[in-house]
Image (cartoon, rainbow over all chains, first blue to last red; front, side, top):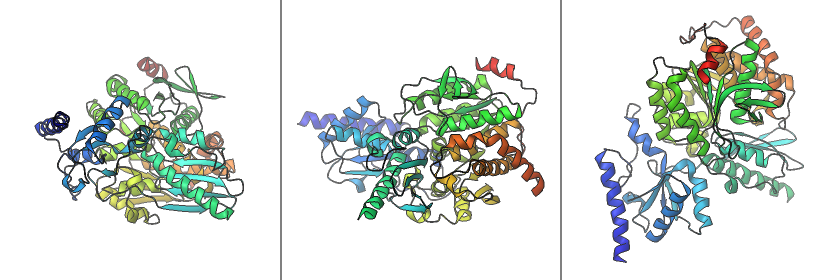
Length: 215
Length: 315
C-alpha cells in the first residue's frame, strides 16, 4: 500500500516540479479565479482555462482512469487538485474540457465514474442547460448553447441540426437527421465534445416536448 | 493563394491538400469526392462556387477525417504549421476543428513568422480555440452566430457550452454582447454575427445590420452559416473591401435562401446551388443602396497571381 501511495505522490511531485520550472500555472495546488481585467496577461491563464478536473472517490480510480485515458490517446495528467476542489480525494485528472463527453463515456465503459467534473480556472461555470424554442409551424427548433436541433411536430423526425464547431457535430448531424427522435442515437453515445454535450441537452429537451405532447 | 482548413466527418479520411474542384457529385479534393452537405465541406464548396463565378484560382483545401477523436484535426494543424512558409497564402479560412490550444499556438506562431501576414478568418472550432488561446485580436474576421457571440462575450467561458446563463440570456442584446466581446479582447478585428439579423461589427460597435430578405428558416438549416463564411472568404480573396464583403455575403446568403424557398427541413446543398445568382442580386443591392465602403481593403492581394503559379506552389 505504501509503495502504491508513493508512486502516486511521486507523480504529483514530478508534475508540480516540472511546471514550476517553466513557470506555468497548471492549477496544481492552485485553483485561483481568473484575473478580471481585460489587460491581464492571458497566455498562461487561457492555457489553463480550457482544461478541467475529474474528481474521483479514491486514488485507485484516478490511476486506472489515467491508464485508460492515456492508452486511448487523451492528453491528460494526474495533478494535485486545488484545495477547494478536494472532495474526498487528493488527486484529480487534468483534461481538455472540450473532450469531456468522450472522456466520460470512455471511463464509464470501464465502470469508472468520477464524482465530479470541474472547469479548472472557472469553478463557478457549469455547462449551460438552458434551451430556447422556435416554432416554425410544422417544425420546432430547440436551441441549447450553440447547438440547434429541428424536428417535425407530427412525425418527430429530425430534419436538421445546425450550429457547433467541433468535428463531431457534422458527424452527429449525418447520423441523426432523417431519424425519429426516439430512434435517433443519443449525441452522448456518439459524440466526444462539448458541442455534442450541448446537442444532447437540446435533444433531451426535444424528447421531453415529444413526451408532453403525447400525454 | 486562398487556403481553406478544417475537418470532414469521415472516419479514416487521410490528410488531403489540393485544389477544391466542383463536380456534379460534390467537391473533389486530391482525388476524394466529398459530400457538400454541411460543415467544412459546405464552406469549401461555397468558396469553389464563388471562385468559379469570379474566375479566381480554386482554393487550396486542407482537410482530414475527424469524427471527434482529434486524429484528423491534429493532421490539419501539423500540415499548416509545417507548410505555411512555402505556401505563402493571402487568405486563410479556418473552420471545423478540435480546439487544441497548444497546437493552435504553434500554428499562430508559424503565421507570425511569415513575411506577410495573411488575412485570417475563423469560424466554428477554429474560432473557439482562437479565443481560448488569447489570439482573437490577431484574427481579421470571426463569424459567430448569436450563441457563439455570447461565448465570445463571456470572458470566463472556455467553450460555448460553458457560457454563463445571464450572458446567454442577452440574446436580443447584440450591441451589448459585441461590446463585451471587444472589451475582453475576445473578438477579431471584424465580427460578422449571423442570425435573424446579421451584424457587421468593428471596434466594439455594430457598423451595419442586414435583415432583408428575411428567411427565418435559414437558422434551422445546418450549413447556412458555413456558406456565409465561404462567400466571405472568397470575396476577401478577390480583394473586396472587407466590410463590403461582409455586406455582400450577408445579403447573398439571404437571397440564396429566398431563391431556394426553404422549409426548416431543406438541406444546405439546395441553398448553395443558388449562390451565384444570389451574389449578382447582392451586388446590385449594394450599388442601389449606395452604402459607402469603409476603406478596409486587404493589402495582401497580388493581382498577378495566376492559377498555374498557385498549382505549382500546392504541389
